[in-house]
Length: 260
Image (tube, rainbow, N blue to C red; front, top):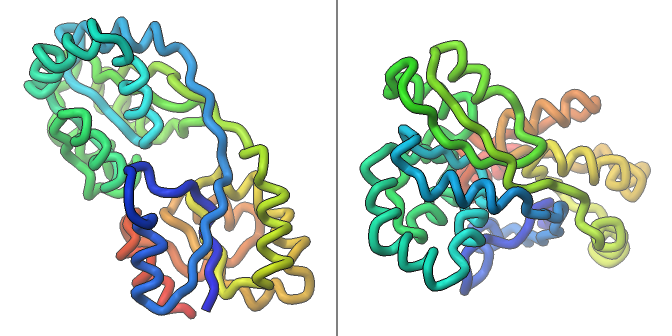
């Protein structure tokens, strides 16, 4: 049974993508098509903030790209040594909040100690943060994308938890997306399920998938990695067959098996 995953390959090196591996163990032939391209911005500004942990109460990461921005700030011998010798240690005296196992894994790779990864989405993470953070203390530093939703900032503001956002990347459509989708449908046919991993994926892919599926659209089970993405599909009039309870390969595969 074929499923189409609208996401980039996994962030870490070596071995098959964790979603491909997990879906294969359930007898599903999964194909990945990258949907998004990323351009990093304001890295000098972010680097300056990163080098002053004394001005912040902690860090928040809600995407792998935000963690990648830190890596891009540590490119020369001076910044690498500073991170290794004292910066990393200073940040680790503060809370490092993350959404999801994938982001948590990348945070661990750069030597930080994540917490909150089991929250699964921004709303749950915001509640987790609010239950731990004092009001009106130093701000939490939040590297994010230009298309970030306001759920987390709004919830923190309502509880007087200070936040300082810095946009470190912009999102656009992957240049090969349209061709990749066309090739997939011509070679593999209509899949049993199409799984969306972001609202941007809905924005950039849905119309072409509907067109390519034609009269067979009713055969497809549409799935989402989380509630925000599911909401984007529903807004477009799509019936969402399942949504992962947490953004992990295991949870998504388990939910999908129930509806296939």
